[in-house]
Length: 267
View (cartoon, rainbow, N blue to C red):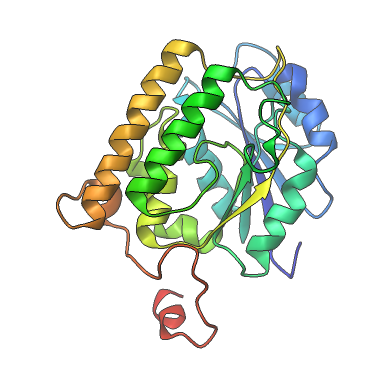
């Protein structure tokens, strides 16, 4: 626990047998529970996770990256999590940073914290393909320009959320594919959630999961569409189901005072 808040790490997994043990070994002891959702892997990911003492949920069929996360968050909330940290089990992100990211949530500084590969300039040093780095920078520039945020990147898979934030978002309205992450972050910006970032070194190696060029192109087009939808919703010009049920609150990244009546209204 951190600040008397229960911390749960969720690991959306697909064929992560080769990297799972290294990942779990570095998860800090302040994490109260680790939940792995196996998205119908063809290797022994689920069996190894059970051997390592993780709580395991197995999809009887592949539901996709977004569908996996939906199960992850539902399971974490059912387990009583106050802070939920999503950590990929492919050892691409450092599990050692789970504690500082969770602490920012547990102490009420932010509603969501992103582990940024761009802050500190470590993305290319860690092996990020040049085409992915360039597309990351372009898409992030476009999203910041359109949505009025100032994030270093929108595309990290290492994230921490408060319980209250997850409960306030219509996650089921989001895609079951890779664009889920971007849609969720757009919902957070639309809502006015307080967003923090932490510099996170990343590792690219053969066993680490990564989508190919074709899937990356599809993801990029999805990002553009998501951004435009959010821009239209923020201006009341068009509202998709992803935003219709999201109540707008304080401007993004602006702390709410402890005596603010919005706390009572939202709590």
